[in-house]
Length: 535
Image (cartoon, rainbow, N blue to C red; front, side, top):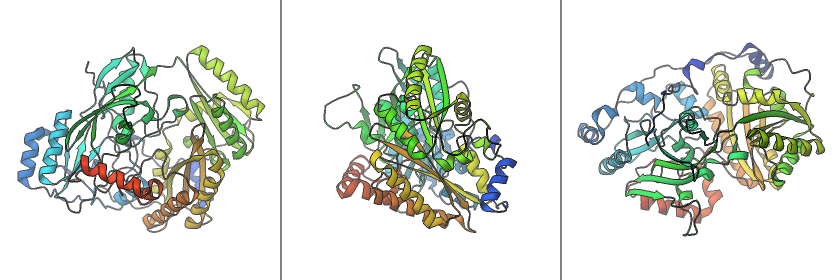
């Protein structure tokens, strides 16, 4: 079996998130609300088509690379290199909009097979060139910014040609796919077999399966389908020392599970060239609904009760009072007139149910009974369907706000239920002290477990004349607050370069030593994504 996607997806905009056709100004209703919060807005200058540094690789090295993978798959033109420069974090975009493209790769290489990837890595070792594996380019933590110092150059290993569905096992309910498939492409291929992975993060429309695995992604339906690292049962990896295959059974007691070493390794230990993942039957029924809670605490207690009672639906999210008030669950409706039927104040919970008609009806009945007993107010399917319609749209709003001088970024963490209040307060305090009282801080519970939850924060503030140092200071304050509160520095955005300063505090000196030892063994010359993840 070897199936390719029927339709190629659109490249993302080089200076903002997502489909270039969707780039646009703030809606008038949203603009009015933002001006009320931050004062009169003005367009910020953006440098378009800034010059890139010339390719610094020697001609002989380039000729050898072309011989290994084909001349047509080694690209040096500025248009392609620009599209493969950094990711889509706010700092990434601020630098690009200011005309700083100094992190552009010297070349973009597009392998078409596992053997091609190994050939590129062997070439890179021979010429001491840094290699940045590239999937969809959706990193928001500086995960695509390799260190240049000490290397002859940097190449982007663009996995766009590795996008086949290789095998489906309908008995074991697994599928083997290549890493360059974007979320919609993979889902479309599997839908032909009546199957789904069920992984739908906010980056779904542009991120790739390889990126999901390399960053331990967690989707919006994780309460029902699980995190992506929990879905992966097998991996094939190309390393500078050769091929590494992992996953001969769904579970094993043959020592530590080394699949977990690769998952979350962010391209620093090897390049994922195949994944085998658990799949489910396509749901016949999907129902999304809203519930109102008088406070974030009351809603959080209800979420915890559902999860610990085995009643978690497929989607389970809870916005705090601020996020509910500005309607961030519906980015396209921020500033629009409120629904007169919705209770004033309080917090919005979104529940989603997916499965057979009978299973959805039965689970919804059980959850409704539990939430009603806990004091929740049902809002019907309107809020849920509105959330589902706009579930991937928030990054577009961020970029429209950057256009008019409002600095917006997100950060996320996870902690145990007993520590939720302390982490929530600590992050809010850190942002207020760093950015001032005028900053707007929003939060929602995005992913849930029996033992704890992920808190996902969005912060907006008036941008300084130079917003990059302003944001970096706020990011540092949050990193310090998370460590002080005993929470993780990242639940699903990964480490990259942005979170690396705090990784040692989370994993300890011995943990850092283990990571460095594994890196040294698999990548002795350090060519794979240098400067990322490993302290």
